[in-house]
Image 1 (tube, rainbow, N blue to C red):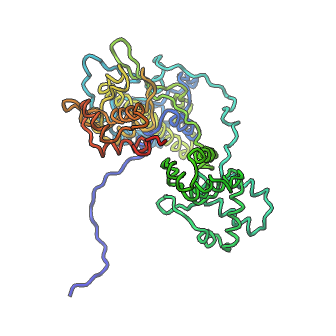
Image 2: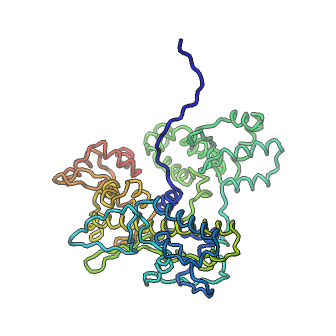
Image 3: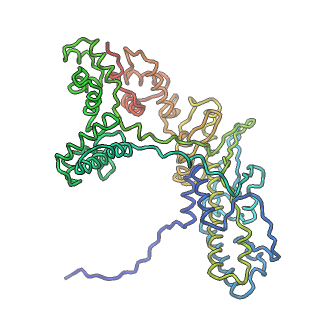
Length: 535
């Protein structure tokens, strides 16, 4: 009779494992210029072998320089090893460097900081070589920025701190409410319940909770009392305290309560506006003013006066305390037309330029150097070389992707946004010769400066919609047309989704009514019924 029993089984398997170098390459590829600058600054602090500068520092020591180039192990001076132990260590290091160089892929042996694209005849797509570091040596890294393409950045030992260091931390909604709670005179048990109330507010200032998937869900006072070990009465009193804090309307459980709180604070608690918000909020949102006037037995003029009061209220009282910081956009590449050619130039202004320290190179030649220290220095060299190669590889891939974008978006660059062509990431990946995920990382959070303005690289990628004679039209262009039609429509007789689809069809773009509805919702444009002015 068969039965189960534990046993050990040896089974050979194969699986792909990313080397540390490739892991670093993947992370570098997703960084934009500002993030890359920050990352390099951190490496300069952590790795003593790396130095910032573009000039080669000549050594004053009499001993010959040690060549750490893994591609030329036979050319290393014999004077670098004074005894058998040093010879063995250096030989092992050379083999380690050679093995590391063979572990990487996806690069071009001769990356260039600039690339040109012919307008008349698109260039043939380049494929990426299998051996990424075949022709790279240390000397080239010492000189790769001395070709005149970059302006050396003068640095001082003592630099003044950046002005960002003097900016005050923006006050959040929680900070503002906690400050008011500290000034309020309430019992300790009520104060503790107030902390629980404040801790359950979202960015708009509404009382809610967050589920395990990160979605906001309603929360009851009973749940707050149970989770915070408060009595229900204390939570109710605490809610009343917080709802009297600034900004008006904070800690409401829904929009109706938020507006009611603000009307009460304004002294309008006995006004018709309260009746409108309490009993006819849905009609108010749909601008059904006549129905509201009929239901309240008031004239339309009176209702419109009350509506003007309601318009002064803030439906998101906490939003002003949670405004996102202005995003600093700096182009990662410049796409410039010189004559009849478009040239891709990487923006390396203020990016620290790296080199390998000659001091640490000569340190490896010293006979009296502790073996542990020597191994540490070699590990630092290995890490530094890998970083330099990956930075160069990152630049090379971004340039290649931009070249492919130029070849496909020539009319956009010459004539403007209405000539944007549909383009998919997989098509560019095939042209460049890399995986689509590599292209996706290369364009993430990066911007290009063109004659038409500054655009995120992802902007150039969009789906195709059937256009004239079967040609594809960019989905972005279709949405722009939909928005333009609605902006120019008669406000008293707005266009229906069916009519917009018909207008696009007359231009040779075949789109269904349901697609128009989806595009309109993506653009956050109300429906035809909601756009119609009511009088």
